[in-house]
Image 1 (cartoon, rainbow over the protein chains, first blue to last red):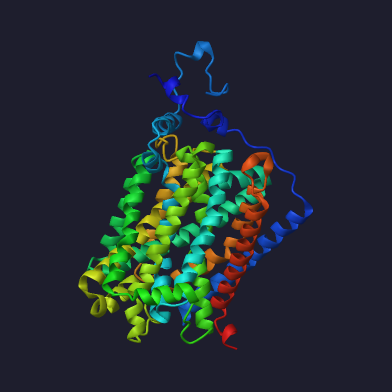
Image 2: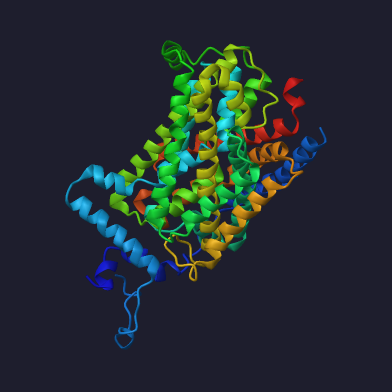
Length: 60
Length: 453
């Protein structure tokens, strides 16, 4: 069995050259955008809290 | 083979298939033969992997410590059925990643990058990488602590752990890496014989499963913290990224979906058994009123258990801790590499050669070596680091879960494998519940006096 025969075991969109192409961007509704930003702010606010917890654990 | 993959006639002589494609195709050919021969057990054996690994990988060092602390503080009661419930939640979440991977043949980080744009793609990747590097430190702390029980020096334990993780990568073959990791992950079940040495009362277990009780001491802040810690020990961001990328790397297709689901369910069941066994192994500490608040690692638990479950039982417990850290180090570092490759459009497969997958392998190598170095630093605040890792991991879950729900409802890329209303209801409830629990856990860890007021 040669290489091409072996590759036939893969589906068309499983080949790495196909996978190198990017998918198109989706349209994101305003509601989803707002939720994503809320979550981003949540994470940005959370990291300093975690650093605070780390520093506090060091000093106690 | 796709049209895009067909070489031009004049280039045919020079054409060489990509190693990644060829190795994956060979794995798929074995799967196809197993399917045609109707050997369902063999087929399941071949297709199992991502689900079992993600669930047993999540039974990592900090998670097992959390289950141990739960058993020592509350004995057999409410937490036995609760742990089962958390793994049911984990199954619901992880099953979505199987469908996403099968439908798109693309990893989670890549889908966020492509469908929501580079800003959100980089943001998700940085979050994942940040949380993963810190979690890796916690895994090496578990390896070091477990080895300490056997008198193995810290440097030897950490160097050996690093070498095992790197040796698995050096195979440059997804299937070999996966089988090696699964073999190690079977060690998670060492907690089962350790629990049997504690002579658990199965009537108490049945009572706990039937009544969701008792809850010794009632619903105190400490109870709530353990409740949240147990939720945080079951669903974390790296799991979503890892399983979807592993499903893609393994090459699963739509006809493999039933086996992909079963793989995830078996993983959840095995992980739940190991988690409950860890709790049961520590019940003697509850019965003898041993205070575990000041324990800092698996070695402390193993040493404290020695008089109650014997030398063999406590040695199994310590070995289980080493295994938990080791398997998680393998899966977590791989999830980081997958995400980096996907976002930067570089190679993202365990089937890649070192030259093709330089970013993939170097990023894993660096994260593992950095984590190992931190753990070996003489003045590293290991206990504080473990605490911070848990907080960050739980806080970062909300965005990852939200992106998962958005993507699994994106019919343009998922088609008929998109969530139906029941899955969305269950998934949505879990996302909201886990996100709130994560936030509450983070807040109460940062401000421990808040609940006491």
